[in-house]
Length: 556
Image (cartoon, one colour):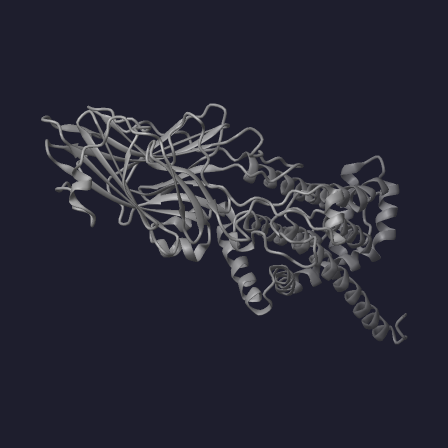
């Protein structure tokens, strides 16, 4: 019996450790060294003439230009651009689900439960720039001539669907064209011209810096919050590279071809991508106060030559189907980690039930039923095994009293007893071992998949399955049903150990779940309810079977 207790303790400890380590403390890959590859020339060509007045692009940029901000409305976002760096100052998403997660106190949670309404949280802001930093998608050239990223541009064409910026510096001319598609995507065209009399070589960088104001993001903590820290990622040379904020803020530079670079905000991304990819670089840096993802293109330009680049930008949610349609491996930003295969399987089941009922909370409930049915033979055998062990309780008690001072002999005698009765003392742990990967995978799905983000269950309080339950009712009910489940199990332990497993562990688990996604609490709560029902049904069946064998009427 001691071996069973040790195994259960190991399982529970492992579960807590895996939660903590795999999601909050997993080590990051070491930064790669700066590449020493010489610049590779892109296909160069004479600058194509955009469909506006030819003289507009040919006109020299004024040397003293006023700074100006330009507002652009797309179907999915409010954009604010600037002529100082010709990039984005702001990109606030539209849509009811494209908001920050709601944060309510316990008191506010119960006020909401009883009908009080609160102001909705602000819309997701994908671009934040610091006062002295360049804007999002600012360009710089680092080579024989240095073109600064905060260069002031002339706005030479302006319309609701198109903006054209132009600047000159130290004999280099740079044109940036933003085109805003009906679906919300942005196409960015860059033309870098060498107007000097000597060859120029270096790297043209497109920068994506994100400022992180103090208090705007939270680190994940085991008993506190899942956290909302943004990261920077790039897909280079067929692999996804990610940098999370750290105090040393080391820089990772990776050679390509690069599919995309992006700032990742858990359920949303701001990405620059190229399809098909070509020889390029990505540079990632993440500190507590800033994130930066840069897209670099090595260039060699002869006098009079112009290099042209065409990229696309995506600003929005990490919807799997939308990301897949881009064709640049953007769907790999949905990082399910170790549990990827199980996550996708669970998500496919939930999608099916969501298609039937139109509610992700009901989809989680029916997922629980499906998993319970799949494990029914296993759990039935474990419960039947436990009921058989209950009959051995008097003999186990006698052995404990007889060998109270000889632990080793006690274990030997108990194992003999189990072998004689043909009972596996560890059989009851197997269903828990099988369920643990499902818990971890569902937890990962809830904190990764946009499909479940800000999706309600029912009532005024449970409006986001990916956030904590603001009333704490689901975690409390989860703990109560765990206690009931333990009470129904045959008590084969000593009183102190039985008290720990029946009361302390459920309370401890409920405390952990207070700030975890409500969808996970819902799954475990429903699973406990089904286990309780299964235990009662098994007892009734065994009573009837035993009564039939004994030739007596079963008890009611």
